[in-house]
Length: 253
Ligand code: ATP
Ligand code: MG
Image (cartoon, rainbow, N blue to C red; front, side):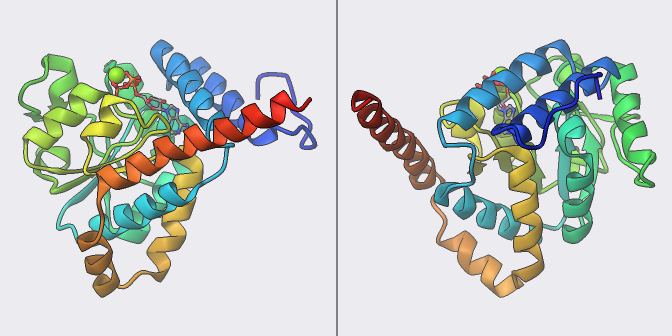
């Protein structure tokens, strides 16, 4: 920790703890400068849903697990923020659903890729991404790098906290893209096949639980009945109504 210890009684303890993890990750060369800004964007959107998993999040989490469970080569694409916030949750979900893990960075530096891979290795888990041998078409050099064994040949990719252009490039390759993104208005949220509007650590823990209970037959049914546009629209309307309620309470002060 960075010298400052957060009292567990603090009303926003969980949020502050995550902020500390991002700062620590930044100091260790795991999180990029832009990752700090992205985290703040995520925090702001989490406020708008009351920092809790909501119904629309849970629906998407079930569809996400279903898609991954039915996939042939599901790959978990990990960036600095995801590694800093949730390395153990990533490992647990990937193991439960038989996913490969690949480090894939928007601001790729070989040093950052190695540090993130080391974080996984320190837990006895091997990850892909240090020796890219393929490219995602339509992206410039560093952003396109991936591995043929992992993302390049994946049928389903879980890309949390991802950038809109890369999400689109993966869709254009014909992949089924699952994302976790607190901003229902982001290009990523609006491009993915399944958009989980929830905070990454909450989402991964929920998905891990769902994974242990879901059968393949249930997975097929859930996926067949899933409509991402409808769920995303629910998220946006939830925010509108939630803000409306807070506005009314505020007027009564
Ligand atoms: P886009 O490129 O998709 O239009 P953007 O440029 O605003 O979005 P990026 O930095 O490319 O954002 O992607 C990061 C996304 O992850 C943001 O939408 C941000 O709100 C979201 N985010 C950040 N932290 C978290 C978190 N802890 N849990 C879930 N989502 C998060
Ligand atoms: Mg972006």
